[in-house]
Image (cartoon, rainbow, N blue to C red; front, side, top):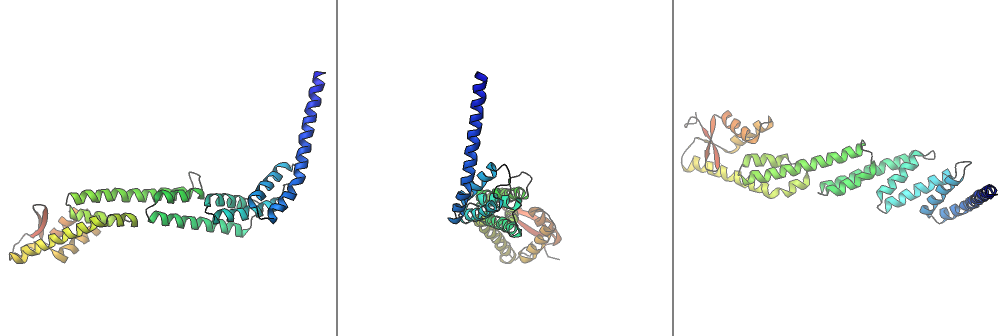
Length: 275
């Protein structure tokens, strides 16, 4: 008797659930039509997903689901929710109902998101840029992640170079500091270090004035300075030498040798007559 009661109860429960599911399935097409008519794309997606889950025979409403995904993705994008928009658009592209325009839209959104991320990055908002890139593809091996890594690498390299520049300015190593600032290739860090750049340029100008004073005020012609020395040093920098090595090599190339006078360094001719 207990076994019969258990079997009867189980069958009754299964039949009840099946009947309820079939009844609910019949209600869904009406809800779907209402959602599409009212342009309630969120409800539209919910209904199509329920149809796909309940219809054991057939495939639910794939065309309606594709339409809802397309419209809901645009809605998300216009509302600033790029992550949700890209998820839905990828689902649409991967479905059998997608067309060429759907793929073009996905690619266009990806390009726009990268462009927006770069605008944030160049303005100094690294984390905002990284956050924008996350929805593109969260797989560790994805190109978007490699792009994010590249942004971080560029940012950290410029940050370390800016710290080095600050130390060189404090140590009054002007030529090296100037080269350090020239190595910065990020607009935000270039702007942040403009005060150090002005300090370096003013210090180098003072050194040039001091050298010119020695040449003319003291009637000495043994100091090599000005544009001639600058060109010689720049040539050595272009060859890949470090700034101080370039200064020494440029001085030697003009027939001079480097001498230190307090905190400053001069390039003096080996032959005081200049010959």
